[in-house]
Image (cartoon, rainbow, N blue to C red; front, side, top):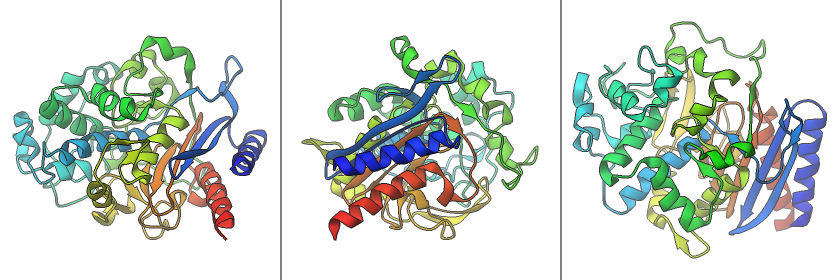
Length: 381
């Protein structure tokens, strides 16, 4: 497998040397064994600090995959049913016509509150109770369960508060206790401790290219992703790095992402630690929604929280491969984690230069993941 790692390293070096990327990490597992662990480029453009295997990256919505796993653990243990109203556990959430919104709706972006509460500031985002109270009091944009619209930031407080209300632990601690510790993952955080601050790679958001879709002021897309929170200056803030933002603010490295999904590639088990049942793993990757997403403004096919592989035209994520049975979650600007249990493979990818790439097959995550898949297909022949 050394050859695969070398091929990925050379490709990542080319991406950095060409100026397409600044700093990258990649890790991958096959049948529970790490086969790729490499990095390239600069972690901090201001100081010239280079990326290494332990560098940490803000991975935006890649965090949603971890938040979803926390909810699935509770379901797997019989502590919740996906069809339960959210208000069964969080009574205040019933306000403004949301009494019938379910845990399933929260996982699949159908609650109807993709918009951030009016007046949300970076400081408010650091206040868990304030954000949950504001979201609980919001009126949904549609009758919960009837439409799909990507809950870019609010997803994190929805799923996180469900976990906290049922279990008692904040989702950040739940993830550490129930995912990271059993799997030996030491580089995933929903809010970093001060001791790892010097490992974090500041990211830079590149302006969208001319051929990227235009986000109009006042649109549902902009309400879900306000410009204030889609830039380097805001989310590189130390207070936001320390805050728990399970929807779009987890800090992690490629090794952590790949190991999380290696558990899924092993149908819920890795190195003797069983996190989920095989039944639940198969359940969460079945098609759950397949329609035009009102925030993304395109067809998106999702399982039970996770995106699915397949063609972009078919609503899938090409970076996860051709199989509709592969599943995972990407993050704004290009990070990605996914599992393909049929291949026995998992993949984690992080980066510092966040940019919109209109053609998904030109995105770095796709190019790197496809390099691994091609190598594995050659070896299988």
